[in-house]
Length: 595
Image (cartoon, rainbow, N blue to C red; front, side, top):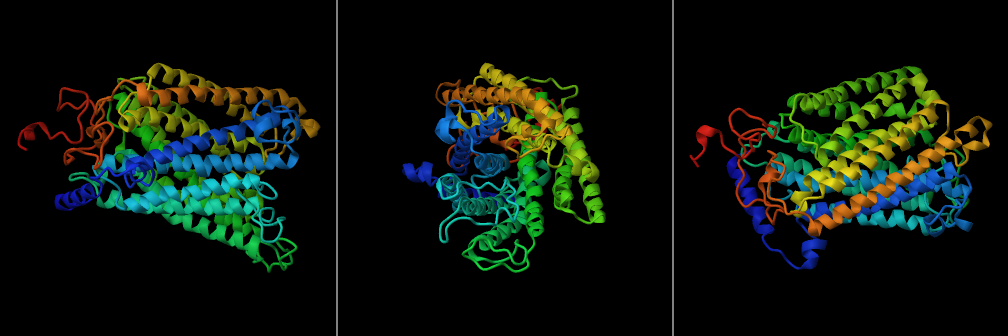
């Protein structure tokens, strides 16, 4: 991108955002990417609490089946006496997964950090399309309302699992003309998809067109590369899920037959459907939802790369292989969706194809893992809270990745598919991994967002208890899965085979309660630091990337100078300068003073 083009963009957007405006235009319907990022952050943290409470209700049922839940059980899950009704258990695990995936993990990574960091890290003053960016946040609110309202309509919230498999998800027991919880679930899913599409268009355009002078693609931080590849995944995969969601709504409410076998009607008020196929939904759903796994993990990988390089005080080991491995993961992610369907009766030759391509994904993932370890090796490691969370992300990702290799093999997956081994793998990758990266990113970029430092002592206390309770909660799930403990059953102890596992489930439940309670430490640290934390300068971590050259917090237009980029973001311990960091905006020694 030429200097003239970049300057033109800078002046145009600086003029557009030069005014502060009133409260509504500044903080509610804001066009400023930083405010929109914070809106995503606060909204997703609130839903994180909801998702955590739903998870505790699931764990309580598995530890103390059909017993009264203390405190919030009587308030929120009001069966009589605070007990969980059998039908409501399916609602709990369905809505827990829905909230955590669609309202927490994806929005906090791509929405909150993507919005906040992309313009700052590429030297732009805002997103390419500020109004579209604002709409991408506000399109989440219909989803918030639809998912939340589904608990209070006829028939209750969705209970067909977060995968919403037909025919269970299509059969509509609601009265004709009334909105059922499952239909509201599908409407919420569509709104999340539209929001993500708006974001992906904005991210791609901004990264391609609005980089600062000198910011070539191979000078981008890994966070931006990860957001870029994530936006590509969203742009190609989301239309498929959106179309499938519309088709399932039509089956439920209009009597079409996309996913229902011939002669089956969604409810008695509709004619019998034509010859649809339930497996079609699985193909359409997983064509999006397997790339969605990488939408949920790639931004975390990028942010962890930046954190590890900064606090190892070393250049990121193998920068270009890291970029290529992210691209390889994204490409392979589109051709492995069938490994979620090994038990669906697919042709063995097709299953072999999906099995082999799934195993290939281990290669780029291993490249990233060894590159992180290579970055740490020999570095002058600073064990800040952000670094501890970043290193724990690597360890959690390794555990989750290794367990995933078992499921890539068709014969093994057929045995463990409906067991807690799958739950263990999923949570190690997408909770133990992603959540560790999110917490690390919050501690790392908090000074830039709010101009103050979070308390490091309480941050490390938060890390220690979270790490211990998290592993004590999820690691035993591997053991449960190996012996065949089934997932999605409210009372597996009905079967003699599993009754001896009750004490282990009780141990996991109390560890889960401890893990959720530990987040109170984080919440107090987070909100108190916003007002009373030590004031941070522009670059408290002595990092190299462009966002640390802007004021803390940045004002409208982000930068108080035109950033010009001379090098990549990872030139720590460079022999060219006396300090152990070498910002991207600092000219080479022979050119200093020329400007």
